[in-house]
Image (cartoon, rainbow, N blue to C red; front, side, top):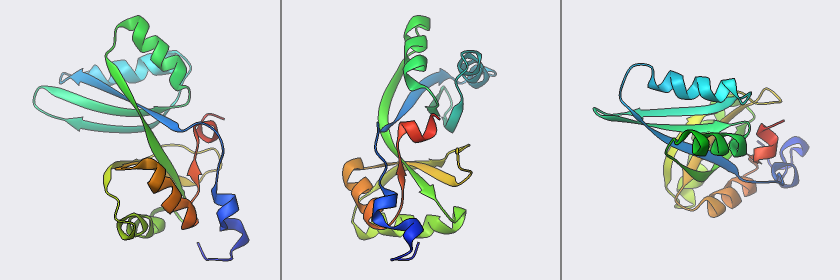
Amino acid sequence: MEIGDPEHDITSAISSGSSVVQLVVFLENRAGALLSIVQLIADNDVLVLGLSVKDSVDSTVVRLIVSDPDTIETLFIEKGIAYSTTEVLVVELVHGAEDLPKLLRELLNAETNVHFLYPILTRPNGRAAMALCAEDNQFGKQVLNEAGYKVLMQEDLSR
C-alpha cells in the first residue's frame, strides 16, 4: 500500500454502507454445540463468513460474522438462542498476511487498543480480510482509512 498508488488511495479505501455486525453466541461446552449453530445458519441459506471460538471449561463464546445478520437475529429470537451483537471492523488485506504487521502498527501508533481479531473465511473479490474490534471502532476506521486500508461494510460481505 504505497502512497500515491491509485489502486490504494484514500478514496478507494472508503466504503459506504452498514457497519459489519458480529453475532456473539454463548454455548454449552459439549460435543456438537458449535455444529448445531453453524448448521442452523446454513439451513437458512446464510453463510458463516467469519468465526472465532473461545472455549472454557463450562461454556464457549462463539463470534460469528454472517452474510445476512438480520435473518440470523430473527432466527435466534424465534429459537430462543441467547446472543448479542456488536459492530466490528472488517479490513481488507490486499497483500494477505504480509499486511497484518503494518495494520497493527497503524493502530498502535494511533494509541488504540485491539480487543480481538480473527480472519474472514471468504471474500467476494478473493482478498484476505480480518475482523477486529478496537476500543473505538470509529477512530480505528478513520486511522485505517487514512493509512490506505479498505474497511469493508456489511454490503461488501453480503454480495
